[in-house]
Length: 97
Image (cartoon, rainbow, N blue to C red; front, side, top):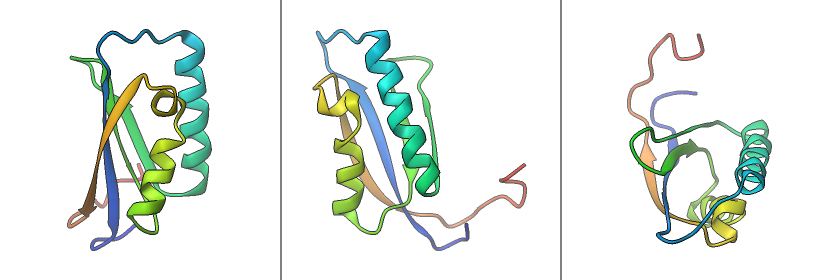
């Protein structure tokens, strides 16, 4: 990974009134693990509220949306997301440690 790389930032927010099961969460993690095997990917959940953020590679916004829409939490209508195109300007030399 190098500076100047275009990535996509997806922030997720739980939709009010929805209930997620352990299966929904496990399906979400399994899906994202497959995506992480295919491309640069990092993600995690927010500690102060339901939701999370992922940063990942995609060829273009259409592919980035396809990845997001394929997530079971999104496709099941449990969470919504905001997707932002992002240019990485600086990366720590210790990033992979």
